[in-house]
Image (tube, rainbow, N blue to C red; front, side, top):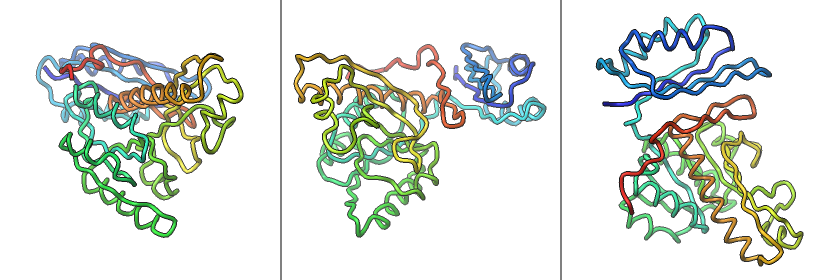
Length: 294
C-alpha cells in the first residue's frame, strides 16, 4: 500500500489540524506520522503529515478535493507520494568525498533519488560516475566562458527535469541569475568556520588557532554567498593531539554526513522555508531504511 504525505503552511489560527485530519479521515486515509510547528514570532504554521489511503483514493483526487479545506486558511499545500523519486543533478569539482558518499547512499537505497546527471568542471570523477551507469558532463569554467558554461549547466538541468541541484563541493560561485532561477532547489555544503577562517586552507587556519570543534553546514544557495537558509549542521571534536591533516580528514567526514542529511530532508519534503530560516521536521519512521547492503 502506497504512503502519501501532505505538506502545508499558512497563517497560524485555530482549527487547522482538525480540518486536515477530518478531511483525510473522510477520504479513507489513516495518519501514520505527523509533525507541526507554530512560529509565534512570524505567525506562520507548518505541517507535514504522512498517511496511508486505505480505501484506494488517488493522490490526484486528494489534491483536487483539498482546495475547499485550504481556502479558508489561505494554505499553501501539496500532496506527495513516497514512491515518487526526486530527480537530482550533482555537481562536483576535485574533492570527491561528498560525491562518493551520495553515490553510496543512492546505490543502497538510503537516498531514494534519481540521479539524472553529474556535472563537474574537471575530469577526476568521470570513471566513478560512468561506472555507476550515470551521465557525466565535464563543463570547464573560466573567467572568460563562465556565462556560457553556466548556460550549459542550466540546459542540462532543464532537459533532465531535475528538481534539485546538489553542490557536492563544487568550487565555483553560481551567478545571481542561476541562484534566483533555482531558488530553494540548490543545496550546498561547506565548513562551518565562516566567518572566522575564510579563503584557502580553512582547516589549516583552524589548526593554527587551536580550534576544538570542526563543523559543517548545508544550506540552500542564494545570491548572498554561503548565507542561504540553513538545513543541517553538525560538529566533531578535535584535540591538541590532532594534526592539520587530521582536521581535513575529520572535516571531510562531517561534510559528507551533513550534506547527505540535508538532501534526505529535502527529498522527503521535510524542509520548509521560514523567512531567512528553515523549519526541518524529523524523518518519518522507515525513511532511513535501505533495501541493499552495498
